Image 1 (cartoon, rainbow, N blue to C red):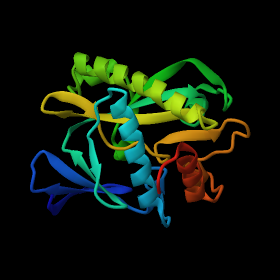
Image 2 (cartoon, helix red, strand yellow):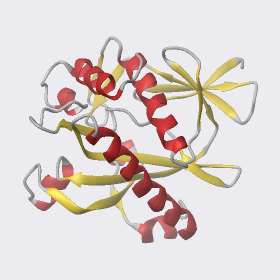
Image 3 (spheres, rainbow, N blue to C red):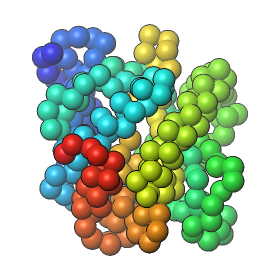
Amino acid sequence: MQKLTELYSGKAKSVYATDDPDHVIMQFRDDTSAFDGLKIVQLARKGRVNNKFNAFIMEKLSAAGIPTHFERLLSDTEVLVKKLQMIPVECVVRNIAAGSLCKRLGISEGQELTPPTLEFFLKNDALHDPMINEYHIRSFGWATDNEVTLMKDLTFRANHVFKTLFANVGILLVDYKLEFGRFHDTIMLGDEFSPDGCRLWDATTRKKLDKDRFRQDLGDVIEGYEEVAQRLGVTL
């Protein structure tokens, strides 16, 4: 697979065209950002850790019958994926109250949510990813009703896989976001799943092992990511 021109450069990943119009190469960089890009640094090993972590998770989802864009690892920081037409909606599942939910609703961090909640956000950094609902998605044509139903189903199916996977190694899956896209009219999971896009706490101590270590200046950010990877058995 030949790597061609850069198609997109985001806050932590770059995407390159290939000689196959159905596939692109996604490169994980060491860049780390928070607060819509107001805080940006480079953290050694981050690109490699997130790439390997994401590949491990995508393979678990595929084994559970959840379609993803993942094809195969190409290097420590690069992965071959299907080229999706991305839907500009983030699906956020919350199993435990944290982050913006606590600020919006005045809820104490750490409250277990039964059942888990699902929220939609418009993927738009300039607007700070505003919260939206299914009527917005339908009215503005971001996705059809059938696509929204499928995204919700896949997101909750993924939640079962994730919660079981992390619980088995003593980690609480607090919340996470997923993004979906179309591949020849089939909806499948795109983007990534890594500690950049979820909250993970040690089940006993509630030590934070995700990007909140960066947001809250707790230090040892990549060490936290690596601890989760090692518990799961990810080969780094």
